[in-house]
Image 1 (tube, rainbow, N blue to C red):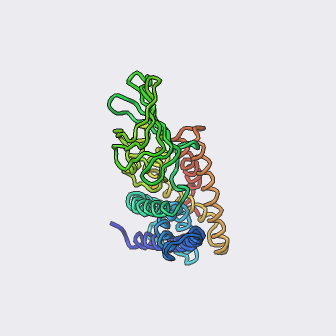
Image 2: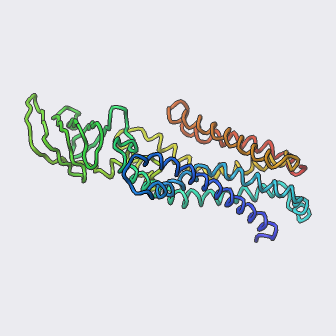
Image 3: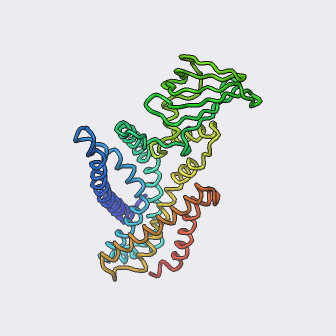
Length: 358
């Protein structure tokens, strides 16, 4: 059972978290509106689109800021406790500094599980709709990521044959300027199909004005049907922003990448990052608390704000560097995700020594 001072501590932490989240959400909305207005200024669209799209995009942006919100929430909680001299009251009731940190750590873990399991999935759905709507207004498909700079590549296996498909780009329901190489089970070339336009609305592709080369003989066909494992929706998911996919879709996407023969490292890194988030939140809460116990209330509120921002920036760049090294294959994927957490954990463990004497 939670005692009264346990509830008081948890309640104040949650209030700090909610208030700081609202502040960052408002900042995200303001900056997002400016960006969307800039995007739509030369387009013939409803004036409400920038505001609607900003609201759709804001939750996923807020999710990316959550680590620093946890850090700041812990920081300002202890700032208030020091100012009101409430730590001595906690000690009288048998609540040591270490126990306070332990409570906040567990609260951060539970909140982290909620934000990843529920909030992230909700935010990714909104991000998916945001991307789809904005892609409708984009002439250059800049919101559809391609596998390589040369275009979209697909490897498909169906009916004991392997299809290697290279297309310059996707426009609507059509692959544009596409070459399809069909191989048998021994990977011997059967034929080559070339077309300027292929309808991929469903898994039975309609190839228009096809040029088919087989056994050194080329013939032109007005229209042929090609059975595949992919349609427009599946291809769009494969090469879209992974932040638009919820957890289940990310696992499906990973399988599809592996099926196509593409590296799934980026998806694995993203999944590991999501699943390690609750622990990361908890470790940041501990780190912030330890720093506050050493700084205490001798400094101004402005100092604490600047300190929190500096800590957030340093941690952000450390994560960015290690994630980039993992994506580029310079270091193992698990190390790219867990080294920053391990590093912060070691600092926190050292800081916990004699924490009750603070």
